[in-house]
Amino acid sequence: MIPTVPQPAFAKWCYRAYVTLFFVYLALPLTVVCVFAFNNSVFPSLPWEGFTLA
Image (cartoon, rainbow, N blue to C red; front, side, top):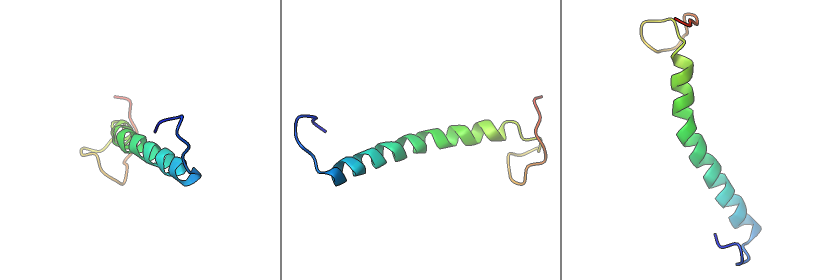
């Protein structure tokens, strides 16, 4: 988006929503892996059997 060209409010909202969803799409798998890294079960799955730091 060029800052000097006026954009409708809806276009700005769509752009911000797209960028936000893009970063959530990138960060969510990393977050899930980090959370499941502390799961105490043999395979990373739900339900959690407990958390460990080992």
